[in-house]
Amino acid sequence: MRLLDHIAQCTQPFMVREDGGGLWRLTGAGDFALSLARCPLRYVLAEDLVRTCTALAYSGGDELSGCLDLLHIPAERLWIEWDDGARREELSQALPQCAPGGAADVVRAGTLISAHPRGRSGSLRTFWLTRAQPQEPLLASVETLLDLDGGLSGAPTSALLDGQTVAVRDPSNQQRDDLLQCAGFRLDPSWQRYYQSAACSAATRAQVIQHSLAAVAFDVPILLALFLLMAIRADLVQMPVRPVRLNAKRVRLGKRPLLEHIEVSSPVFASAPLGRAEGPAAARRAPRFHHVRGHIVRRRNTVYWRGPHWRGHVRLGSVRSRTVELRIPG
Image (cartoon, rainbow, N blue to C red):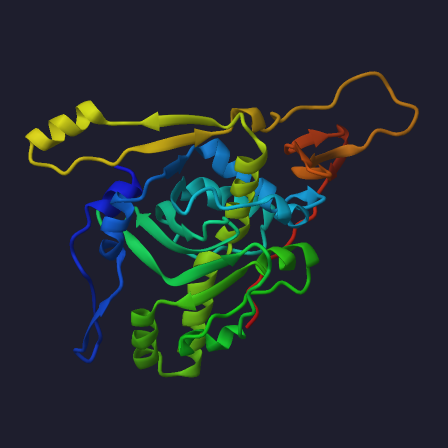
């Protein structure tokens, strides 16, 4: 089943017992089961689209931050789900020195979005499905706030456990920093009370803050890239999935029906295969064999995307591509 079905069929409250015996009832995936079942628009991204959005989010060229005025959240209520293995693999190539948050055994991830009617602001709740606990969907403790007009002003990350909305910044890269200025992060109230009680030492509090923010911060540029593709491309392939016959059988067996959704793919953005540059000799020396990262170019309201590809001649050696590191300030 998809992650969305695991959440919609989740009925158990999320309980945490402390070492001292205290029992906490925290906000969990089951608290959003009804909201997801009633969500009018649910997208499940194909692996190629996940990789394209990740590459676009951390691409070169004019950068995604130069297209923020073209973006809007596609609906007031929206579910987006993706293959997290594909996201992590593509992200590790774009940011090899920056390991994203979240366990390596996460297989599916998704976000439930509530947006303002204008589509320029909203809030996100993030969910996971792990290989270790395939039947139990998990909810991120942090809620992500979006304002594409840059109206958010967050506190330092150290204020997260105090219940404040905090900002994540990347002062080493202006383009990444512009994207992150559209986002704010705050703890769910039940999780905030729990961490205030359980995280006693400064080291534990710092670890909780780092892990909580790292688990969701890397998704913001990727979601913005998806919104851009939805805004400027009419050729994303959308396939409605309506499991009518399967649901009829599930009902006969006493099982809950699966949710309808739309599978979205982007074959038009497929990356060029690995190959060697051949052809007639040029007047200048050919470039060494190197990988060109995907990049975008904006010409007024038209955006061009050049997918990742290989250039140069292998006999002339190789060049390592530059990387951009996204770090959460301490």
